[in-house]
Amino acid sequence: MHIFLKMIYKVQHTCVYISASLMAILAISIFYDVVARYIFNSPTIWANEVSTYILQFIVFFTMGCIQMEGKQLRVTFLIERLKGTPRKILEAFSAFLILPYSIVLVVYGYQYTKNAFRLGMGSPTLLEIPLWIPYSFICIGGVLLVIAAVCSVIQAWMPEQLKTERGV
Image 1 (cartoon, rainbow, N blue to C red):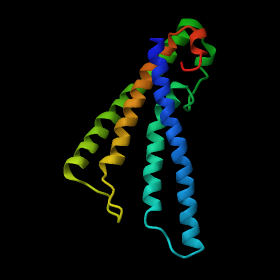
Image 2: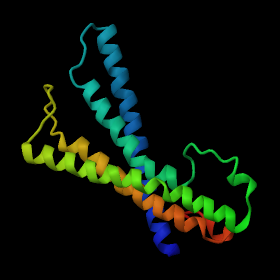
Image 3: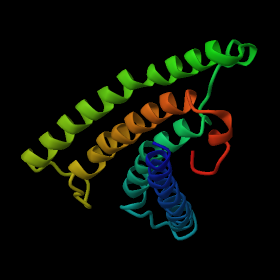
Image 4: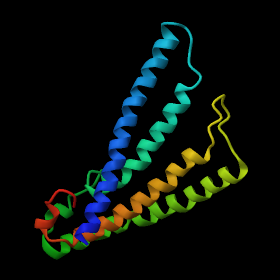
């Protein structure tokens, strides 16, 4: 099980590294658009759409890693006061509550992606990006979040010395 969690950790962090790289591209494209628009009075036709899709990728592909590391927004006043088994139960339960939300992302993300692909839907701009690509980010991000939620439930029951190792 420990090897499985390490593998999931590496996949999740690969998504974070890709997202960080895309964040740099996002900043550059927005900077370029601002310069082109306000200095050269020649706005771009692609920067807004590309920025939207990059931001969508970043959001959906980093949710799982954020969940696994417990860096999401949490209300911890009760969990911090508990010790031992009651704390583990509450941590596992709170991680388990993420599953319905993430399953909805997977199911509806898949339906949107499938329909966009089947109908050949494209963005209504000059770029005409096939919409199944950004829609697939929802489904894939949901799968990553399902996996992360399951891993978080497992981690809640792991001994503390295993949790402190990098990768779990």
